Length: 481
Image 1: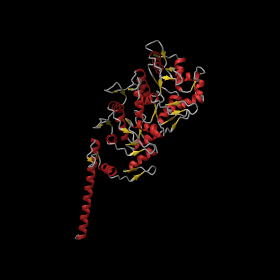
Image 2: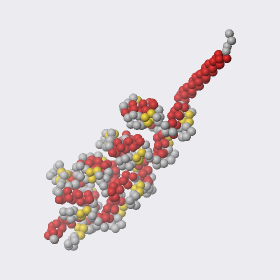
Image 3: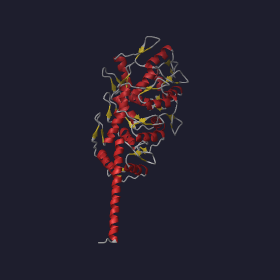
Image 4: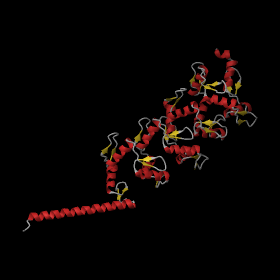
């Protein structure tokens, strides 16, 4: 029986299809073997032609190109509108972010991760300290390449596309912005120090706090002065601002410049805007920054001062305040001298305030009751509360004394009840509870300086309080005229 032309064509098509199927199976097996080989040998033969990223699978490379370079993310989350390039990534996102499922737990710490790869990265970076990706500009090291790329973009290239809608701070990633919102504006600080009451928004900040404050570890020493720091970024900032005099943050209203953005924001708030939106609910003091208010509450009202001076036993609410106290009081480091008198100051702002009050006699804040004038609003507020309203909320628990300001109570307890007078005059045997009292003693007793002159007679005094008492007792009737 003869085969027709149609039968021959059908037979040839079947053979061709079978051959193509075998070829596809062969290619599939070959690709599978390549993938197995890539996983086993950790090979990444598929390289992106745009950014040089490499992958073990062609599908991974395709997904990278579509999502990163073409911006194709077709799988969108129905809960938060975040989009993904792969369905698996969307599924993982829903399980970990919205359902809170993180099944992979670290055996070395309580950390949980949403995938085994992230757990492996966590172990390598955190516990094994492996950070193979080094920045060629500043030598910083990272555990993941994307962290290095993000570092270069944000730190060195200045690319920070994510802006806070509350305070206008810009960040390099959405994660940093979310962390900023939670810690700064929502006040969430879940990482608490077991030694003191300090709390932090990130685990790294807590670790840094423990090392520098409690363990006293400050391995980063300045080569230009004796200052030491717990972290390298702090040392770099110190060198730039103190020694190189680099103040990159300039005020757009005046010619002032600052080494840190936070200092610029504080300057604008205090000097130009004159707004202090953060008010203490206990004593009605107001502050520019929420952090300053929190520190005020801890130190003044809750009396939390875990940082004690080893020389004079004074206690402080922050390590920076203790360091400033040590430098100013005990090391006598006051690099800002007054050009009109012998006074020296530890801060430039204190020098400027001194010149305005003492030499220029600027006292713009006047009391509407007794016409006393003050150089700062804080002094006026304290005067009104203590003198006219007779508010003395700080009571001594040992005796019946009460004071209008916390510093007065502290001074009273140390000098009267604890008999602490660590500051001794080198010219006589007098001792004092505070360095300011010692300075006043030297100026008035030994140097015979009496800068406070009475406008009604020739009397002069070494302290303003004595001049005030003189006016009230000697010139009582004259001052009322």
